[in-house]
Image (tube, rainbow, N blue to C red; front, top):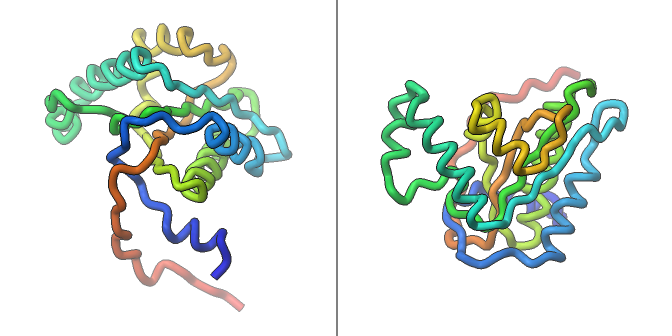
Length: 185
């Protein structure tokens, strides 16, 4: 089996990270993988915001905690009561991918860029987790202030985000669904 397939098949969402920042060279490779993702009409409509500052990570986490506590979703409301709650599982690096609102299919393009980043991280021995909770944060008043603090360009919408760091665990793959492929010849 080739290395690309090994990486794809071995990558898992990591929800426990070591308290050690990833190396600058590794971060640059992860970002480059995102920049080389395919995009509609080669529009490359993304902007990557990398957060490694602990105080800012804490601020983002608390804003998400507040939002999820008021979400009306009982599971989220219970989860955020944990004093150790971290929307990005205490990862030392958090990357937000925003897309140009005027671009065709920017949300899909940003998701593809994040997938490239997740796979490149795995190839480097770095854990990652796709974080969905941030999507609705930026529509709030507190989220708008955070957006400015993060330097996300005005015409860009934060679509997806990922947590990155050295793995503190190695999960096993859950079973895959069956009967999900139709081949028509």
